[in-house]
Image (tube, rainbow, N blue to C red; front, top):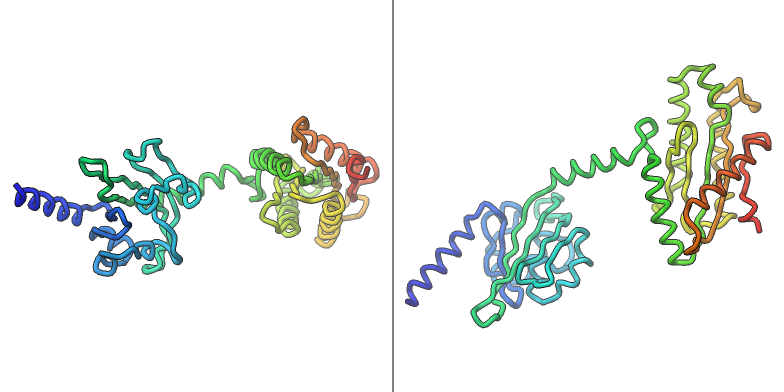
Amino acid sequence: MSSEMDLGQGFAVNLMQHLVVPTFVLDAKCNVLIWNKACERLTGVTAAELIGTREHWRAFYESPRPCLADLVALGRTEEVKEFYAVHEGHADTAFGVHAENWCVMPRLGTKLYLAIDAGPIYDEDGRLLAVVETLRDMTDQRTAQTALEQLAARDGLTGIANRRSFDERLNNEWKSERRDSRTLSLLMIDVDHFKSYNDTYGHQAGDNCLQRIARVLEQVVYRPGDLVARYGGEEFAMILTATDAEGATIVAKRIIDHIAGLAIPHSGSEAGHVTLSIGIATLLPKPDLPPEALISAADGALYRAKHAGRNRFVLDPAAEA
């Protein structure tokens, strides 16, 4: 009976070694038991380098961190969310855990997006014997998905965020700043006399004008949490996180100066070149206040900027109080 069991185990190990799916197996102490040929091809790291060690992380990352199989073996599956942006599991980890992650693959110098599954193997008494981890290269699919997401989030003419992205970001930042008790500022930006510009210079020139303005706005905003979006037509919006009225005013002045520096000729403008009107609003988000209140306040300030003569910024009175 023993020889039959040994034969069966040997067959299973040999089968796993030749699976086309990259697979490795850890024992209960996270030592590498099996590192199959497909895993060698995927990572460039040979089985001889890893068998009997806990150094398997080196195949995927540049610095030490647990792989999914480690978290399962160590009973630390609650930490999966800390290491993997995409993850899925069951209350009973006997069914295994799924996660997805970008891996740098240091040996090959490549970066791959891997779909990872790790499942435990127990003996008849319920003791953990090993954890099997399988890997699938999903780089092409992930790259295509990211490209589609970016396309859906970008304005087709200017390349900056579109209205949909603006709405989503504003809602998210409103919640975040409310949680952290920080002010949020919004700039509503309108191109002065744009209809006249289109009528005089043509729609192609109008499109080019909007593209040049969008590039200037992107140059002015450089913090990761901020956002520049095309709100609609010739109107743009700028979300400034953790920014008070004074900081927002500084940004608005910088925008006005940069646009003046472009000196885009416009015979229908009082200044003789393309100018902008900007409405600024700054609010401290509160539970009973919707993010639309910030838009309304900035719109009101923009209206006053237009009626005060254009080519200027106006701060919402509530922010000045």
